[in-house]
Length: 435
Ligand code: ADP
Image 1 (tube, rainbow, N blue to C red):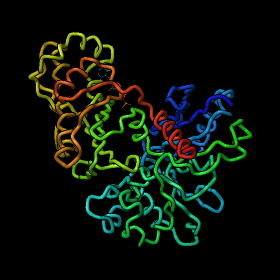
Image 2 (image 1 turned 90 degrees about the horizontal axis):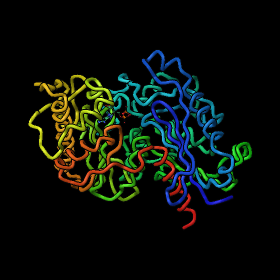
Image 3 (image 1 turned 30 degrees about the vertical axis):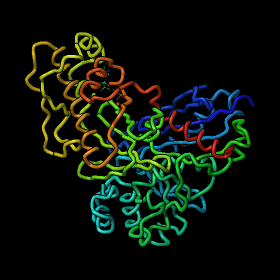
Image 4 (image 1 turned 180 degrees about the vertical axis):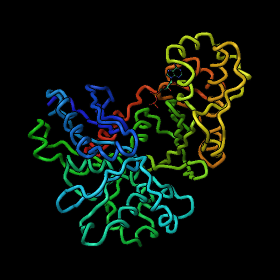
């Protein structure tokens, strides 16, 4: 085997990707596989997600050039947050789910709200805990609910296909089932519940070695017997990790269809009113996040991507636009203003499209600045430098506008793929074995 390589696999909302890196972070191979996209509840329910994911996982392993496979030291996988499966740990059989990240279980919400602290992140109908409680309530002991039933997050399950151990997870995925990364334990309001025995017993930092890659996988695909499988994380944290900005005050703004910000903070900040919550980062810091409904979706309603490029050419980013909009694709905002009734504001529209676009980009930048200010007001470390991911990162004029409005350096992130972040976790896991 040649130079050691580290494999990260991302299971996002529409497909799976892999990235194979060396210890310097250089990419040696990448690839992707699509699986059916969830459109509407009925179609989602009719799709055999677990089979699609399993197929995509092994297709990706088969896509890795055979020459690289013996050099792979470690593997990690990220999955969509709150995507949940119920599995029989005696047989490995899927008992229920997958319940997708965005599937809602309002039936379980009153029960969850009655045990969890007010405004806890589990108090959302799509949380992992609501999924678990909904399933628990709909089943009966012994009958449809075997004693060996366990809860697995999407990435736990995919990693399990590779290593075969039950009951292992990471503290990023486990947050939405109620795990407390500050306590390093499940809180007592959760452990006192009868279904708590279904929770992963061992919750570790992302990028912690779990076990060796299964023998049959090694021999079938030509991986090394020393290849170790490591705990994963959620897809949005993996995308954050890809930007390699893990010092306090560093942040990543994702300018895709929506605007999401993630800030490394010394202090944990949670505020359900704004949908703000903190993930543990590297056992040391907190990753505080918030997401606005503004973003590229509104731009796409008004302009094609080509028009965005052409019109941006005519913008002077040094000149502030006085146009004051609040671009939203539909009614309702959560962060940095919590107002379910807020209506989009995109008027008055000037005659010049370039002026109009300037006003919109500037207004979105103001919302971004307000977001970072809100996090600071809530107690988080002040932002010092912003990396940008998503379609909006391509727009240099917008970057310059944002730099002026935010008052801190703004640059495009070198790497933004979640698969790359997962590969960094694999590297972390392998390094922990050496040191
Ligand atoms: P997502 O994955 O959230 O759908 P992407 O990260 O692919 O989004 O980004 C797509 C968004 O980027 C679109 O909404 C589009 O309007 C926006 N976008 C594309 N090109 C530009 C540009 N040159 N300037 C600003 N925004 C852009």
